[in-house]
Amino acid sequence: MSEIIIIGAGISGATLAERYASLGKKVLIIEKRDHLGGNCYDFYNADGIRVSKYGAHLFHTNDEDVWQYVNRFSRWYPYEHRVLAKVDNQLVPIPVNITTVNQVFGLHLQTQAEMKKWLAEHQIKNDDPQNGEEAALARVGKVLYEKMFKNYTKKQWDKYPAELDATVLNRIPVRTNFDDRYFTDQHQALPEAGYTPLFEKMLAHPNITIQLNTDYFDLKNKLKNFEKLFYTGPIDRFFEFKHSLGKQLEYRSINFVWQTHNREKYQENSVINYPSPKDGAFTRIVEYKHLTRQKHPKTTTSTEYSIPHLADKTEPYYPVPNPANQALFKKYKKEANKLTNIYFVGRLANYKYFNMDEAFKNSLDLFAKLELGKSPKNKRKKK
Figure 1 (tube, rainbow, N blue to C red):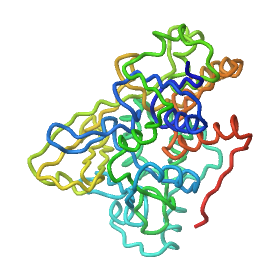
Figure 2 (figure 1 turned 90 degrees about the horizontal axis):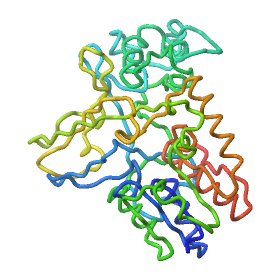
Figure 3 (figure 1 turned 180 degrees about the vertical axis):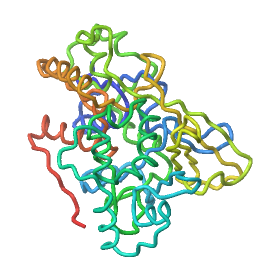
Figure 4 (figure 1 turned 90 degrees about the vertical axis):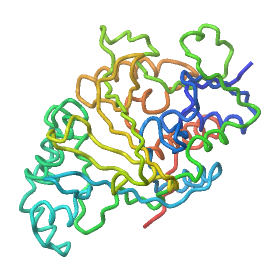
């Protein structure tokens, strides 16, 4: 008999499984897919090039506990992520920084003071933006919004920024210097052998049993006498869509179009965004060898198209944050809070996008709270 039942073998489920196994608990993981690691799963394709099946995953954190935890299962090498966007037939850096403004507007700004002055002249001030468009205009002004964010958002969400919560574009980073790193966290790194071996090591404990290719809902009535159950799937599916009136919580999914090219390098950067509709319906192209540091005479890219999520046909990636979806999620959250010894963990169960380190931290904190009587702590290294 398994004392701990975990639905899903991604970050959240694997972390909880590893922690409970370390206490001597018998753990059963039920995973619908045919592999470990959730969306972080990576593998070597037919050409021998390591790729990530569900898109690039970049680990970054300021949390020392999380950083120490993941280092138990893999060696890591430093990697600072950079993104370029095709704007007016040139590649400009994202986040918006001095270089971005100089390239787009043909200027020669050199100092933070000059950049701050430029932003002050172009930002449309708004202390309480009500939607994504207002938030973006307050961050970068009208021209950069039109060129870099408006149509990219439409491609990604099938909604213009004005149709989305302000939170979606309120996170647009803007730098007043030349820093073109996508993240600024203290720890930015990738696992040397990839994410899949990391999860294999996490779950190698003899107390952990894993059932792949298994749908929890096909056997849930057979699971009895467990101590705790942790569910990491879509929360509305758990409750059989009882509040949805035929409509599920809305997600965006991704169609990956894979190509292997008979040359060592395809593009000059790991990720290039294509915000203009003139370039096509895809959002970005990712070349994985920039991430993995792999030496190979060929290279593989994925061209990403954002598509609607259809139950049992596509993977749910990004929750669509608008008032209707948030109101529906709150109904399911209220149902979840009534249950005893069943816990909803991770992005799908909480209808919220998590960075990788946040997913690790939430599971570590939940384990500490339930089993060690500890309140969540935030051990972050000061810069």
